[in-house]
Length: 628
Image (cartoon, rainbow, N blue to C red):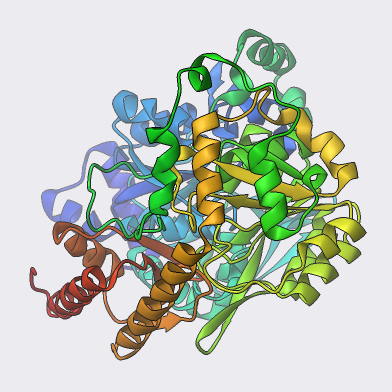
């Protein structure tokens, strides 16, 4: 249909004169839905955005996203998808109030809004693409749209916006950043079904490329302009507004300052809205637990001796001895001075305490990617900012990307740098040379080395060298993994004496339980037992690695700990995992760089042989579209 015919039909449609046959002609142009992007943190709108996502700000008596939803519904568009991420639970009421569909963007804090359109890609058709923080003085939405467009406004003065250049046929042929006396993009876009299909095809093809992760949707489109033709829907000045800062809100709405101050003052726990508590996977399963990285050989039999020999005084008296016997035993075993060691209730509590002490609001924490999801959760408790460095793979091994880490640390003035070694989930150690490069060249950063998996393989790092030479580094270890005392919740940290003066401020006031510490001491002394299981774990791990390496869809990586990390290709990894759960085996799945990975805990040989048998069958069944 030519555009003139479409305009004529729409005129008849609005006047009620259209026939049923003419209505059928309009059907391909009917808007399927609207996708509203509301996942971002809107850091430029702090401190209010610490309490509310920007889309939930109230402007001239109306919540921004609710105004947009109302206008869409008034235009006859009732199928509305809202992409959420930051403080996602605060948007949940929209489902009941407006029957919208909420889609979670789990990558909102590591990628730009191209990740939101990726998260909602299965909904794209004849779709309006909206932002939750746009404000339309008049309803600009239509139930039928002829072709894809950018909404545009005109600027006489210079504006740092995406300015368009049109060709003689009325299509946008290029977009550049910044201009004057130009039309620029603002507000909602509309994508036709063919445009959406092509956009998804291009995005999925490139989504594994880190170069696109920081792109806005507009930037990605610019890369493919010739394949994604689009027009300009030009609006009168002031009809479409967007707000980037609180000052812009205040200029538009004189009462916004009063509203903002009231929200912050009235909400006792306001700043904690949207901060969620990390919770591990809950399960009653005792067999097949390959997801927690537990030492499934169990602790030394001697670990039970203190429980059999316990006396009531160990329960009703505080431990007030001059020295802590467990610290003394750690000191002897690893040749580290007692004054450089502290105890805590597990490695996870050490993470929390160190971030609590060292990280203030808006301080940057540099995290590995992929990582233990507890790390960013604790940073959120402190209202710190997060940045991420990557790992890279080289054949059968993964490595810390030191160049990326150094660049990100300098760029973000990172206050706190987390290094896992052996790394979770990739299983690789960091070299002493790389670690020293990080510590030495980032003197204003506190370098936290999480050695939760210390003990399973030889670790070349000389802790004494680091803590005697540098004050900006500490090491964290746990008795949960190698020593198999996860149920006792014991961990210890190692740092310089100067660092210890600050770090002890958030440690437990009184000593850890006497019986638990005695149990840990028995384990530290039982070298014969742990030398034996170390060798057994290594043997089973090698067997498992070679078994996995023979599989067409699996690429395992060498590991310096008690689990293996592997890339899964050519098969639906999530479907395989779900089938394996039905077979009684739990393990972790990761998505990274657009690819899928498993992390599988090494268990005794009989368990691993049963796992591998079922794993092979399940992968083939899922590939063939069958149930196991």
